[in-house]
Amino acid sequence: ADLGHTDAMVYLGICYEEGNGVPQDKSKAFQLYQQAADLGHTHAIFNLGACFENGDGVTQDISKAFQLYQQAAALGDNDATFNLAVCYSKGFGVPEDKSKAIQLYQKASDLGDTDAMFNLGVCHYEGDGVPQDKSKAIQLYQKASDLGDTDAMFSLANLYDKGDGVPQDKSKAIQLYQKAAELGNTAAMVNLAKCYLKGDGVTEDTSKAIALFQQAADLGDIHAKAQLECCHDQSDVNP
Image (cartoon, rainbow, N blue to C red; front, side):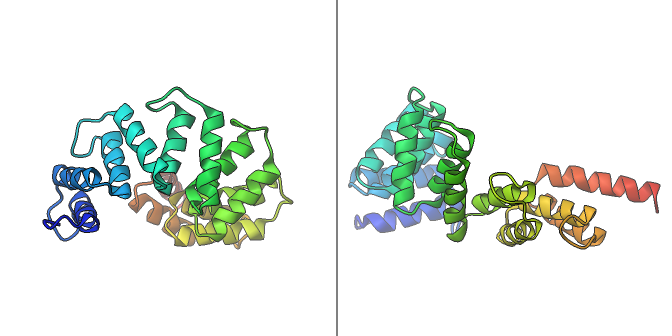
């Protein structure tokens, strides 16, 4: 990094940001991203934007974050294109512009960004910035799900569970909840646990339900913690 190798600066910055192999030091990470960005490293510009957005190692400045995302996106950084879309969608650092957000989600999605595919799917599902089109939403959820996006898997599972926009298919819903849960999606763990608790699409299995609630709770899911308390209260009443 001292020799001006920008990739090394960015890698070292990530190590300091995450505390990976070195003591965590977000200010040091910010300095390294700044050095690499000054030398034209596109993803360093994006990382610098994220620091300003989150106030990591620097005073939070959403407008500055937006400018940096814009700069990195113009240089072809797809993560920056996605974050720029979120800024336009929510009015972060720029006046809200749903149409612009959709264009940027589409651009990032076309380049393979699964978060963009999922968010674009949500827009189509809710009719947010585009005419409501559940069929289009399902296609986008499916595409992102096939590429490993657990939020898309979870949303798709919900649709199959309820028969919303697709024929109801409990078995398909369970498969998707299971897959997303195995990949660490706590919302999927909670819904799968509820299925086991009620015997909905699966054989009723209270101990499996509690294990899933516990797994999600251990990962910080507040809904899972509440469900666990309910389960424990019921077992106290019905020992």
